[in-house]
Amino acid sequence: MNIEYSDSGNILSRATVHNGVIYVCGHTADDKSLDAKGQTEQILAKIDDRLAKCGSDKSKLLMATIYLSNMNDKQGMNDAWTAWLGDLSRPARACVGAPLASPETLVEIVVSAAK
Image 1 (spheres, one colour):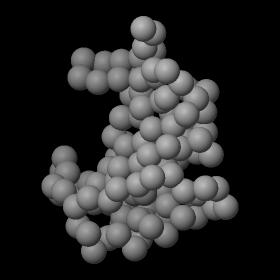
Image 2 (cartoon, one colour; image 1 turned 90 degrees about the horizontal axis):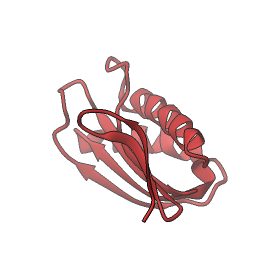
Image 3 (cartoon, rainbow, N blue to C red; image 1 turned 90 degrees about the vertical axis):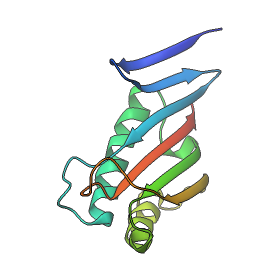
Image 4 (spheres, helix red, strand yellow; image 1 turned 180 degrees about the vertical axis):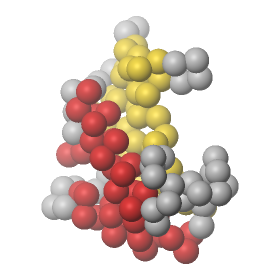
């Protein structure tokens, strides 16, 4: 069994790859002063970068799990999400309300994609 670990640290790897599937860790925005739409845009740019480093892109997304600290922010997050995907097929997705790492963290996104 071959598993690739990308950017491993003391706690996690930024991504793992197994059997042609890339599992990307949860990403949050760097600028926590942004609203949910702005934070989502920053996160999606990070996901683009991570998928590229693993030899894939958003056109190969399989699943996304999106965590919102406040479900009232879902529309802003969805606006950024749909703009990012454009005309691409939509992956399976879950959107969950949950307390996040800090009060300023409004969105966290985890994805998996085919390589």
